Length: 556
Image 1 (cartoon, rainbow, N blue to C red):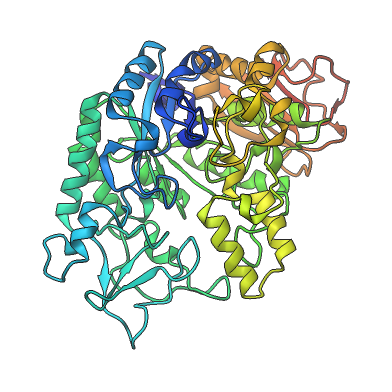
Image 2: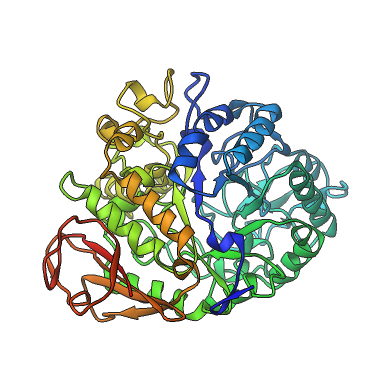
């Protein structure tokens, strides 16, 4: 069935909620979130109104990168529970009208996976070609690539006098997708999970599974190592591999599929998320969250400017219209808290700016993603000490740039406070009791001290809370086809302060305007019979202006 330029699909109409299991809810007091903790809170998620729960990895893992280093794809991490706990959670989620999407991490495995243990034993081991091994070049690494987590992307292995590739931690060796046996094993594992009854996959760094076979040196961007991105992201066979995955697995089930696609371009996204659905439903692009880049890449404490953000958001709306489907997100387990980064987390403006950012995103065309705690306006944690951080990327970056003298300790701590992934990984704030109700034990990472005022119990008791605002946005998406299928058109495109756009479907028009500043801004979009106001984060309005962080949505 066609609606506007689009074919109707359940995953276009859905709202996805990402759970970071380690930090969501601890049911047994060991300080680590678990599957039973998720099961206990399914009624809360059903009340919010979301449709799908995306779980960050829950597979067996030594936890070098918080579960993104998998040692057994068909077992549950011991700290999270058992397969019986998973089966019960899946069944209960379905009873609460919630679908479950698993994180698929198959660009790399753990070095403790049975495949890699065999692979490193000898050059003629049957599993040798499951991974990417190269001989030394002039006694050193095969090329100058740097790892995402600091240091070289190559690790020397004395047993065979060769290097293996790891684009992330040295405990995360990259799988060799050129080997058809690797693809067979991955697709068999995916089928196993689908037959269990899961509802889809979020695919970790899936754009990196095909490498340039020449493995050339990369451009040096941080003064230390070369970038692998031009030779790894969107590589020569990536679409071929995903089409094979689709034929052999995805097309056989009614799934939601989203690929994390670092370095993706508009043209590549049209292939990944093509209308014929021969690969994936949609991809995550990173341009809008990477719109501030300093001398050492992402590490910065500068807030994004609307003048940098708008053209990126608009480009993805315009260019994918009728050709591919967008994913919509502000934050996730790899990004800082949205209200701290794009809004204003002060006591005065936290609530209103959180609602404005939610409005801006959820009225766009695409499938929206909510990261746990976003729906109550959780903020960055602003740790003062390096020892409070747990994220391997943050810790390694601090030592790489401070120890080399590139950045001062004080400046690097400022960068971590603003951009570190641990800002998103502090425990979910359930109530104002000890440890925010997350655990009766000692949490694996410190709780944000503002939990005494920012928590779900307080949000549920306040009819004007961020929670109920998100609930209403979700209800609008579920009841008004224009919110899902309407065509996007940008407004006020020269404004440094207001992000505005329309959505049109048949004879209906939505008009959306969001003030990204803490001061009143002139705006006359709603002064000439714009229609019926659907939602706003202010109870009363002022003629001709948008108040600080004000958002308004009209249907006409």
